[in-house]
Length: 160
Image (cartoon, rainbow, N blue to C red; front, side, top):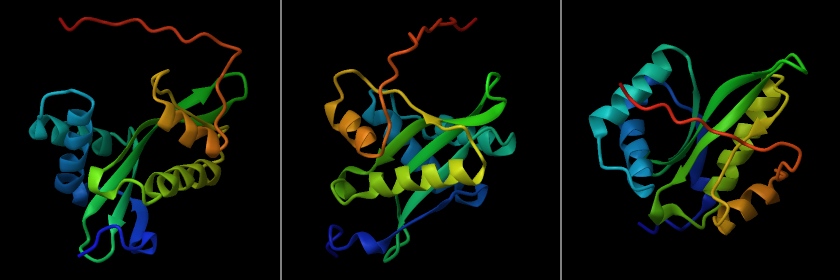
């Protein structure tokens, strides 16, 4: 099968807890891509907790021919006190290596935008590495702009 055949063979849908094992495998591959050690059980538990507590929304890209999940994005809710509205943090975006270059990330970003609109969100925010030129170009094609009004700070909390 030629996996690069047709973007029409890709469907984006909301993930459910019934897909947990398949999503955990994809999520684990994402973490390994970013230099983390493989931990499929940890990935499964992390995602189970997100589903159980309704702490995130996961959108998955499924290849129609074989039903395989080939990409995902995970959104976390946040709120703006100033606008008194919900917003979403697009925290994760990943497509399996064999399926890159097909426009799947574009589909996932569009689905995230549609979900944000459907939930009357103020917007979507994300962050990426300064030197990740490919990702930055992708986000900018979808209307994301670099925030030059605020400085982003982070405080790392060490595990006890």
